[in-house]
Length: 85
Image 1 (spheres, rainbow, N blue to C red):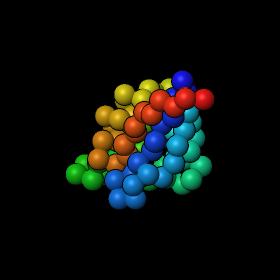
Image 2: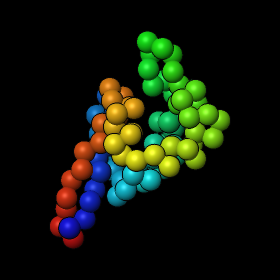
Image 3: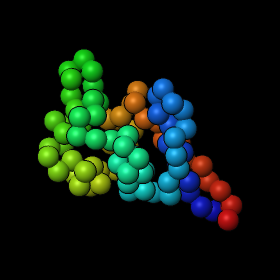
């Protein structure tokens, strides 16, 4: 079995796939979905840079998928699919 993660964005639906948490983050950064000024919480105007600091793109890789799901709830949704090879 192989794990595949479907990456969904609130307004755009499925935007990509990855094989790991790090793959999810690399995809979101490379495709421009996550940037310094990405707003995680509009009520507090919290950006990813505010939350994780100037090296957010390195710090986010130290987190895990549960942290990501909780932090980005309402923005991005990750769904695990188990596939046969």
